[in-house]
Image 1 (cartoon, helix red, strand yellow):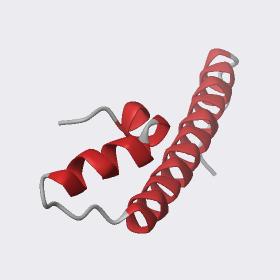
Image 2 (tube, one colour):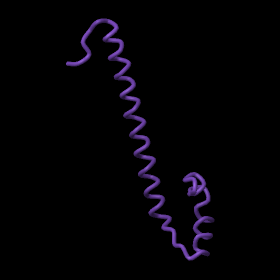
Image 3 (cartoon, one colour):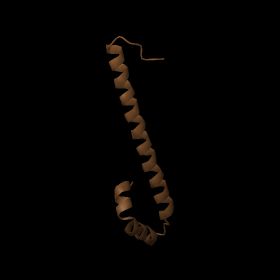
Image 4 (cartoon, helix red, strand yellow):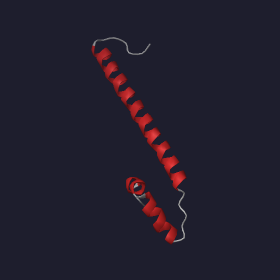
Length: 70
C-alpha cells in the first residue's frame, strides 16, 4: 500500500509506472477523494476541539458546584 503523501507528491510518476503495468489509475478521482478526506479530517478536528472546550467548561462548572446540563 502506498503512503497517500508519497502518492500525492509523485502522482504523475506513479501513474506512468502503473500505466506501464497495464493499470489505469484515475488521477481525478483520487484527487477528489483526497480532497474530501482532508475536508472530513478538518471537520473531525474541529468537532474534537469543540468537545474538548465543552468538557473543560463542564469540569469548571462541576468544580464550582453548578449544574452543567440545562
